[in-house]
Structure formats: structure tokens, C-alpha cells
Image 1 (tube, rainbow, N blue to C red):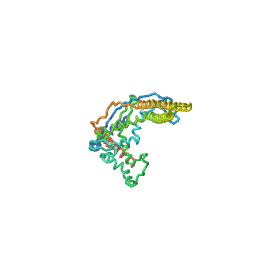
Image 2: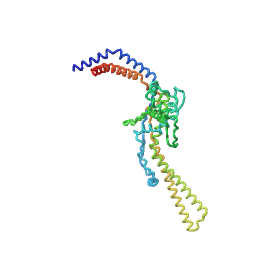
Image 3: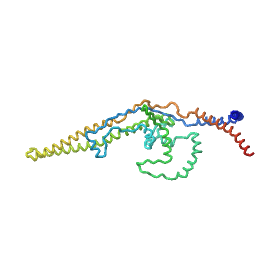
Image 4: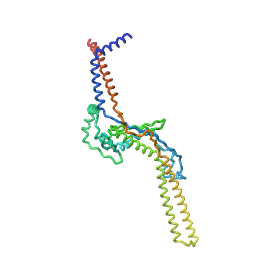
Length: 355
């Protein structure tokens, strides 16, 4: 216990004896922290909160059409289709979703221009002082690599398949980190955020993100009902054509045989009449089922109630200059004190080794 007290006392004396060195090193770190804080890129965050209201419908067989649809490889069971809310963040991170969002033009007030986020980050965005330092230190190997591969031409891919260059995909990935979708499992609310270097752009991107996400969710939730509606509409058109054909056949036969003098003619007329009646009943039934399917699509389409509307942020979300200066100050103290304590230990170990 006494040895520990002696060691602590010795450490305190050592630190005090090198207080000028510690103050100098810490001051340098503080200055660096202030420079980094003042030159760090400004970011704004816009938010929106939604509450989805799902309409759960019951499964319908559509008047016996389920078996007919099954023969065509289509299920008319419309209940329980949808997208798990836990997958909403994954939808936003998908390449298709990001590619559409990042290439939608938005207004940047600082640049007084309307441009896509992709073009902004590729052509107009300038790195901060810290970013320049990182690019020319940690990112230097990547720059050297680009010098050797810049002359290579990118291969073309089929138009239906997305393909990005390494630089473009890096921009898209960085952009995805600016987007946030969080689902509260208890309340069911969806909180959407977008961070951009411009306040108005942040609000615009958040608005676009909300619109694109809700559209995607609605598409997923109504997909099954839409397939069923398409199937019924095809059958409806077929039945209407069939009914019109039978109707024309009966009218033509009646015009040619106005007197219906023989039993054979009357029998043929009755047959055509029955075929037309059957075709009409199928046509009438499918017309009803088509309206039911349309209603089902509307029932499955989710309604999103806006709890917290998107607004232009008044204050910056980044950088937190106080935190940056504090971190640099703490780092300066840790480095200087550690160095001050390491010197006597290092000298002591060297002197013992020489003996």
C-alpha cells in the first residue's frame, strides 16, 4: 500500500515537473481542435414522423374464381400481404431506391441551384480541412491506385442491370449514411431523417424520401391485390367479348329466320339464346368481381398519418464545435501526460539494461 502511495506521489511530482511541456502540447491540440471545429463541414438534419394505418381485409374467393386463377398459377387469396416494418430501413438502403433518390433534383440554397444530390456531391461539394488531410494521408494509396486504373474503360452492362463505377458507388454509399429510417416497434411510428450540407436541401430530400418510401410500401402491400385485379380484368374483357359474339350470333340468326317456321330453327334459336344468357351471366358476375377487386386494392393501400411534418432546420446538426474542442483537449492532455510519465520509465529501463 505504501509502495502504491509512493508511486502515485512520484507520478504527480513527475507530472508537475513537466507541467510546462504538458501545457504546451495541450495548447497545440486545443488550437488544432479549434481549427478543425471551425473548418468542419456544416450539416443540417430534417426529420419527419409518420404513423401508418393499415387496412386489413378478409380473404375472398371472388365467387368461385379462386380455382380458375389457381389453374393459371395465380392466387386470389388477398389477405395478409404486406411488408414487415422492420424491413423499411433495408428498402431505403437498396441500390434501386438510392439511385432514384440521389438522382432526383433538389434546391441547394447555398449554391442557389437546383441539382441532383449525386451531381452536387460529385462536382460541387468540397471536403473540409480534416477531409483534405485524410485524403492526403489515409486516402493517398487510393489516389495512387486511381492513377494507374484511370485509363481503363468501364465495361457496358445490359440496360436493365445497374452498374456503377467505384467512385460513383462510393458517393451513393456515403449518401445512404445520410438517410435514416427508424421504426418504433411499440408505437408503430416511422421516424425519417435526412442530413445534408444545406438546410433547404435537407428538407427537400426528407420530403422526397418520405414520398418514395410510402410509395414503395404501398406497392408492396397492394402487390397481391393488384395481381388479382389484373387477372380478373383480363377475364372480364374475355367474357365481354364472348357475350358480344353470342349476342351478334343470335341477332344474325334471328334476322335470317324471322318466321321460325320449323322446329329445327326454333331449337337452334333457343340454343343460341341459352349460350348468350350464359355468357351474359359470366360477364355480369365478372363485372361484380372486378369492382370487388378494385375495392380490395383501395383497402390494402396503407394510409400514412403525418405526426411530425418536414420543416427546414434552423440550427446545424453538425459540427458540435464544443465536443470537438473538448476531444482534442482531452487527447492533448492524455498524450502529454502519457509521454511525461513514459520518459522516466523508459530512462529507468535503459539504465537497468546497461548495468
